[in-house]
Amino acid sequence: MVPLIDTHAHLDDERFAADLPAVLDRAAAAGVVRVLTIGVDLATSRAAVGLAARHPVLAAVVGIQPNHAAEAAPADWDEVTDLAARPEVVGVGESGLDRYWDRAPFPLQEDYFARHLHLARRLGKPIVIHCRQAEADVVRVLRAEFDRHGPVRGVMHSFSGDADTAAACVAVGLHVSFAGMLTYKTAADLRAVAATVPADRLLVETDSPYLAPVPVRGKRNEPAFVRHTADCLAAVRGVTAEVIADQTTRNARELFSV
Image (cartoon, rainbow, N blue to C red; front, side, top):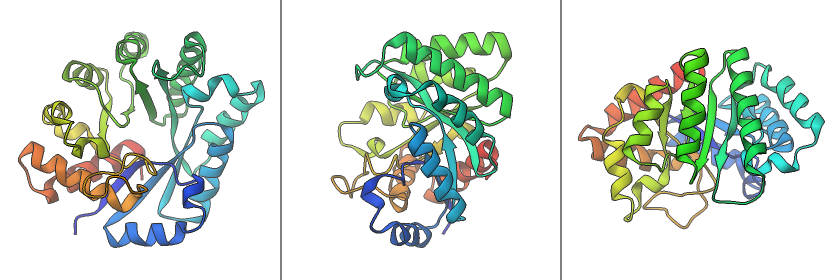
C-alpha cells in the first residue's frame, strides 16, 4: 500500500475526543503515514501543537481562520506567532478570506491574511489558505504578494474553485488540495478542474471531521478516508491509485517538510 498524507484535518474537534487513538490506528491501517492537524484560532492552535507533541504521526499548523478573526484578542496573534516557530508546527494557517459567512469584517480578514502571509514567509513555513466564495479576492492578494516578494509557498486547501482560479494559484507558487467533495455526484466541474492541476502541485486531505467522501458521505470524516479522495483523483486523471498516492505524498513531504 503506497503511503498517503492527509494534509488537513481538525483532530482537536470534540467529535474525536472519545476515540482519537482508534482514529489514528485506522489511519495507519489505511496507509496514512502523516496527518496535519490545523488550528483555526488560538485555542485550537494550542490544541494542535499539543496533539502533535503527543502523537508522532501528527504535525501541527497554527493560525487564525478568517471567520474567527473578529473573536481574536490582540494578544492571541502574538501567541500564535510564538507557536508557529515551534518544531511541531509545519505550516501557518489556516488563513484566507471568506464571503460566505458574515462573521468578520472583510478588511479585518484581509489584515489577518496579510499577517499570516508575512509570518509564513518570515519563518520559511508554508501557508494553508481558506477560501469560500472569495476566489477573486484571494487571487488578488496572492498576486500582489507574488509581485512584491516572489512565489508563495503554500496550499489552497479543500479547493472548490474553477480552473482559472486553480491556474492562478499554481502561477503564484501554490499547491492545490482536494477533499471529499471531489467525490460527490454534483462535483463534475470540480473533477474537471482536478484533471488540470500539474501533478507536482497536487495534495489530498480530509478536512476531518467535515466533508466525508463517497462512499462514507454522511459519516464523521477521519484521516483514513483520505484514500477514497485519492482514488477518485486517480480516476479523474486517468492514472493508478498508486501513482496518485506516490505523487501527493512526495508533494506533501516536500511542501511541509514532514
